[in-house]
Length: 86
Image 1: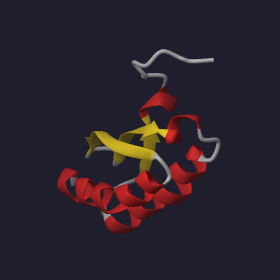
Image 2: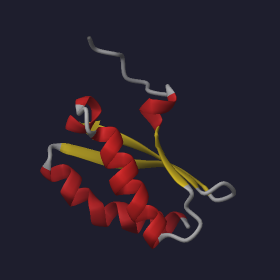
Image 3: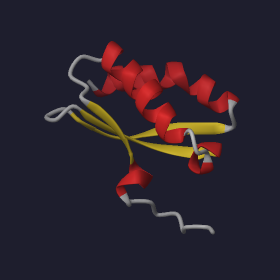
C-alpha cells in the first residue's frame, strides 16, 4: 500500500508545487487505511488547504489506492514541530 501511496503523491506533487506548496508522506497505516501527510510552503497558510486535502488529495487517494479510508495532515493533528507564527 505504501508504494502505491508514494506513486500517487509523486503524480499529484507537481500540481501542488505549481501553487508554491508541497506534500510529503509521513505515515501509512495499513490497518486503518489512514494516510498521514505534511503540507509545506504556501499550503501551510493557505485557507483552502483543508479543501485541497479532503476534496483533492483524499479523493484521489481513495480512487487510486485500495484500502485508503482517510488522508490527514500532521499539522492538523497538532504534531507540528514547527513553531507557530502569528
